[in-house]
Image (cartoon, rainbow, N blue to C red; front, side):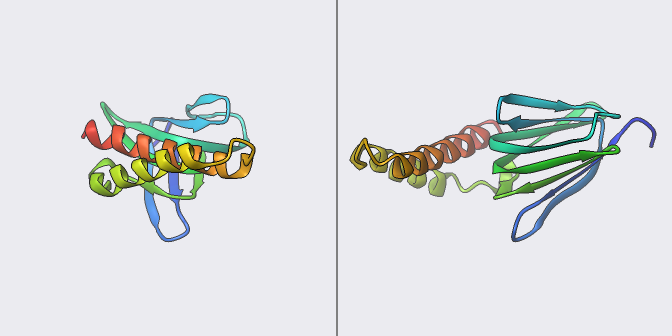
Length: 136
């Protein structure tokens, strides 16, 4: 099909999706990154957040736990640390992860930047998963 993009999302444990899409938006390091057909070649890191893509009139969302994206000749390859569709999200597990991350933030020494960064990332992942699950 002319004017579309081949999108592939892969994690260390599975191929999450392989679709032809009209456009997509991904969580980049400086905000949302929009990709349309014939986008310039690009390699970037991805933040924790939601990747959304359009096919015809419908939009699909996938949560990402960070990773990398390559855009090359109308092919977008996402190598994600973790990715899941809204109906795959275990809300009880995400709620437990949120509580655990909030506790870690409260109990971590303010001078331990590495531990604080890990706790903030865990909290962000849990919140994105909960927000996405609430929209399904």
